[in-house]
Length: 256
Image (cartoon, rainbow, N blue to C red; front, side, top):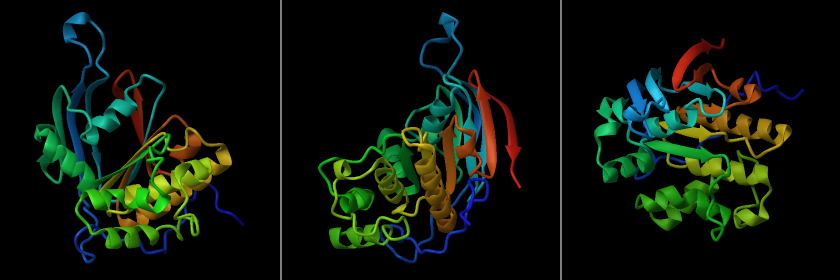
């Protein structure tokens, strides 16, 4: 009997080790937002901020779905938490370091080293075969090509991608391409994986399969998972749901 989205399976397949040393654990830690405000326009123009004073804590290994209607601020919140955007005010603490106060080069290094990303369209490089797309974060971090591709290949079997290592993104189905994106997000053993509408371009059956793989492997590696979604079926895979409206958190629930 296949598992349903409300009972995600436990992972058993080992993942590739983090960059530089196979013995290093994932970069586990708490991700904390304090009084985050993000404005795209000056406060004097009278518009509401995209994020209007949000505080939230994401514990090590926790999976959190951020839900809300379009324009509620959920994607902006994800981008600020991930260090892609610098907030107008407030703090983002990752292992007690304020991400918002880091320079651009330091935030780039942090995203490569400690964070993984899965976006709605996958964002794979079309000219690279799948295995090199997966290995790319390690290569950018200075890992030897042979070692990087070896760690990348180790993720293909648990994701049901064995035999597709040399295919380019244009030769993959939507679900296969998104699983390659999951492998890329996890290959460096990040502390947090950020996923922005990871099933938004997929049908429901394929989306369920992608969420099963994403939550399974993230849980096995010890990574926290932050998923932005408008889909209740996607949110059901996470242990906690945070609901946003008009740039504010309006409610939260923890699943058993």
